[in-house]
Image (cartoon, rainbow, N blue to C red; front, side):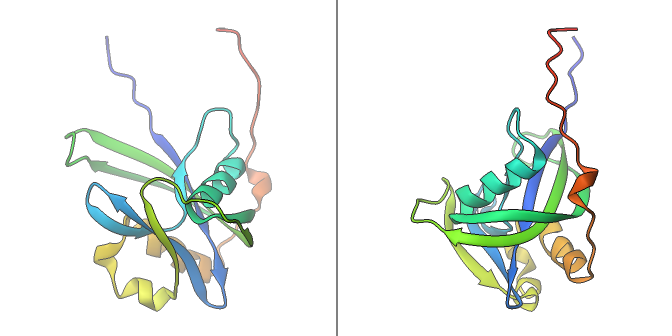
Length: 159
């Protein structure tokens, strides 16, 4: 039986306050890395619901997406499994809200606020090269309306 190819869909949040960006420091298979609040789309979620959930889980902050900064496809060969991996990443910007008293997601060490220049000074700590690219595109003013995204909730009953 042929293997079915499925890209992984992820979401990420660009959250800026006073020239600083909210990041997470997380444990990965490559060591401790920096990233935007980000994660995988869960079944039956919209992309907007996923980025709100991931931001809350990883930073304990509410997040309201206001625009789409970009959609990115990346491919690489996993050093762990040797398999080719494809990610489709939807990066949102928006408003940060209340911080809640709750534990951070497993693997998240802490949250921190960094400037663009501080991020650029430590590329070896980035989980992905998309981290800085998304910030730069946000700072350039790239925005697409959320109305471009549509979620259809039909159930096809096996048809």
